[in-house]
Image (spheres, rainbow, N blue to C red):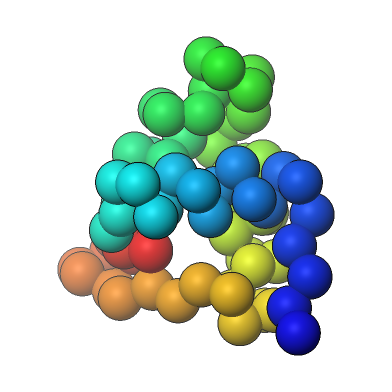
Amino acid sequence: MIKLADTEWNIMELLWEKGPMTTMEITHELEESKGWTKSTVITLLKRMDNKGSIYFEAENKTKKY
């Protein structure tokens, strides 16, 4: 079973509601309410990808989760 941290759940719920989304779209959604920067979002997305809880499709230089 995959265990997600509370911070990762914030992203997961956003992706369920509005996905697929790019890193910047996720950042824009969460920066005001959570105060997260792009680097914070990238770190969390990498952790979630490593756990196998999300995946992305590459479109040019952009990843859609």
